Image (cartoon, rainbow, N blue to C red):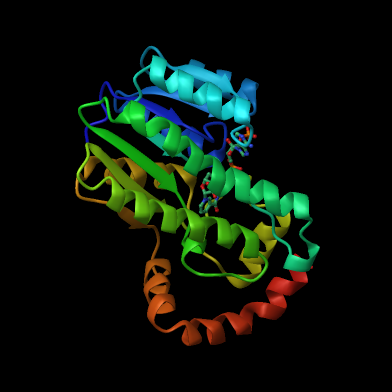
Length: 261
Ligand SMILES: NC(=O)c1ccc[n+]([C@@H]2O[C@H](COP(=O)([O-])OP(=O)(O)OC[C@H]3O[C@@H](n4cnc5c(N)ncnc54)[C@H](OP(=O)(O)O)[C@@H]3O)[C@@H](O)[C@H]2O)c1
């Protein structure tokens, strides 16, 4: 799909990856509906973007009001592309996750994208060509210690996206699962950054991630993209030989626990 003149509803636009996605898409001629919770950052971003007609709306995607507002904005502005990018994470062993933190993470990372898809499909069906991109993670394919809830939310998002893609296979809506690896943004706490450094985990910058997303959008037959090498190989090994990955990750466990406890 060529994004020029397309209207894009982007959640998580005030975050590290979201801001870069907005910049890349606006530079390619898209009109952006920028959403997040931090109105100041959204307003600055809107001001800075090339092109006309961008909109910034501060709301909580985890609330019914937020979803209702997004659904009516999408209808009013005839959205062509929905990018479910808002997300939260927390490094902690599972017994240290509060029930509120678990519910919140599942709501923002999984339930909100699912609800937004269901509300926006009728709008997207009106467009000649439409697209849904769900931003997952490599951790949506490989379960990691210290991130059980986050992994559960992204595994769920991957399964949801695959099902929806098959359900909409004979429609005008293409459905894409886009899975970055570790990226330097504020979703990763200082603790998480320090752990990644100790483990030697590779880290992308959000600009690279956004460019990859534009490339995925432009390829009409692309429905899934995992970023990073060797991460995309580990995804395949974990699917067929999870015991190999269990043994490799067990070696990292003492380091992970020293940061996650
Ligand atoms: N960074 C990584 O290492 C990495 C790796 C793989 C996948 N991802 C995925 O990439 C996506 C973007 O993450 P990021 O790295 O850009 O993180 P980020 O910088 O922390 O940005 C997260 C965005 O989500 C928004 N958000 C969170 N909760 C929200 C809520 N209840 N309502 C509305 N907006 C909400 C935030 O808005 P406010 O800040 O305005 O609250 C912010 O715009 C996420 O889905 C994440 O899981 C990230």
